[in-house]
Image (cartoon, rainbow, N blue to C red; front, side, top):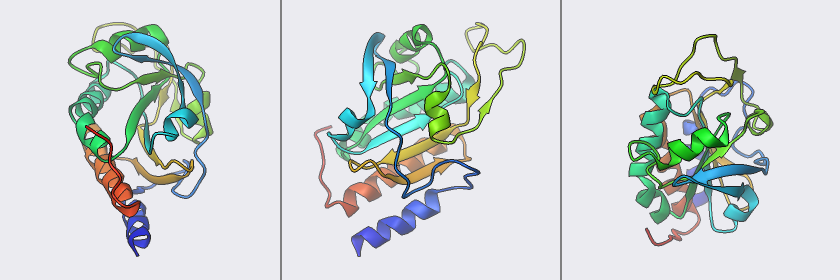
Length: 198
C-alpha cells in the first residue's frame, strides 16, 4: 500500500515530459568530472546509489539567473535531503573550470553539493533531454560568454536499484527543488523511512 501511494505521487510530479525518461525507466549510469567546494573529482552515479537515492538534476548553465536560484535553493535544503536519505548532483554542459567556481561560490552551491560536467551533452542525451543551442552573445551573470548548449531543466529521483522513481520538470527553479524534496520524502516513506544523519 505504501508503495502504491508513492507511485501516485510520483506520477503527479511527472510533468509533461516530451521524450525525457519517465518514472519506471532505468536511469543511465554515468561517470563525469565534477566539482565540490571548488575541488575536482570523478563522480560515478552507481557508486553514489550504493549510499541511497540520488537526485540528478540537469540545468542549463552555471551562473545564469534560474540556475543560480536552483543551486542556492538546493544548497539551503541539503540537510533536508540528507535527512530523507538522498544525495544530490547537478549536471550541465559547463566546463569543469566553470563548475569549480560555481560549486564553491557561497551564493550558489556554497560547497554543499557537487556539480558534474557534461561538455558534450552525452549524459543529458542519455536521459533523453532536449539541448538548446547557445545564441551568439549569450553571457552569464558574471558577464562571461557562454560557449555551450543548454540542457532543459529536469530533475530525476533515482532509487538505489537504478530506477527513476519521479521526475520534476516544466516548472521554475525554486519550485523544482521544493517538489523534488517532496518526492524524495515520499520515496523515503515508501521504503520504510530509512534516514541518514543530516
